[in-house]
Length: 414
Image 1 (tube, rainbow, N blue to C red):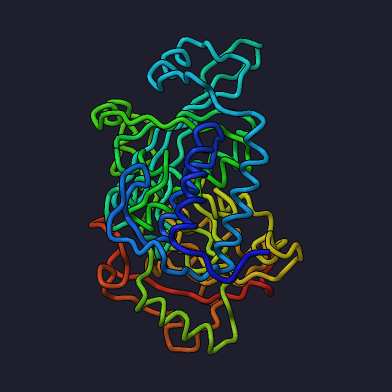
Image 2: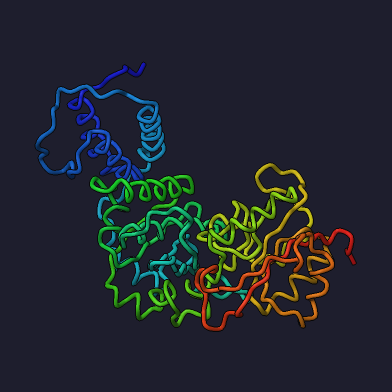
């Protein structure tokens, strides 16, 4: 039975025991920092702490009980396996990986970097090709920061990038039961991922988040700090910002234009007037999606799809959360070159769609939009005159004006 209170001294004893056990149990060390946060100290427990009233009583909350159960679960699973007495240095692991010493084993290397708008990561592993020969596989993972993320400081961005990139990788590659060598140039992030963060609750949350994922997947992590120049040379640094040598996808390209809150408020007002509610954002990222369900261009952890056109029917679909088939009201702010294709797909599916497109009255799809529009003003659409003030990440190539349509194509289905 858990008592209602515990002294700081008693909690410190538990922490000390957990540190001792973490030497031989994987996935335990990061959780120890949670105890230090409960103690109210930002000191490393390996150092002598000052200024703590060891006899003060600390209320044992449900959160603390959950932490105790989690640590016990980690102990029960990890104690029989133990840890390596003389683990290989990360650089040696990486050298052997490049030489193909881990063929047939589930060994992965995840190199990542973070920028102001998002992250980029390169996952590499050995796999047999169609002819049965071993070949080095690569997967580029590019994503943006989910709305509300605390990414003002670079270390916060780097450690969150590790979480999101790993979550993406786990959705597309079977990582279970393997080992991942994580490579990054931020010492603070590498330290927090290795043993938790006693000074930063923000970094500790991300460290615990990744630790829990790896524990569920039974993945053994190894963390390696590499120079920033290495990430530049390998192209990961560029992909996390404006481009690089890894391909034609980078964070700046993925983010793309999105309506700002003021324009979205206008759109929501019109939606309420007709009793509509957007259910899925077809062209979005984690940072600018206008509803929880969205399709993205790249593998983002929460994205429902990586290509809106792979969604078989825009008028209805099976909800991944409840498993039921729902009617959809889709929202789309597509790249200009896709506007015509979006209109054609919406008509063919008989969809209800909120669509942001360049104002182009001579475009082939314009009359179709006007006929299906439910907007009741004289234009039959919401006119956006000052694009730079209404759209984030706008460029000089953006149209001078935009139009926002609310179209009901149910009566125009082909």
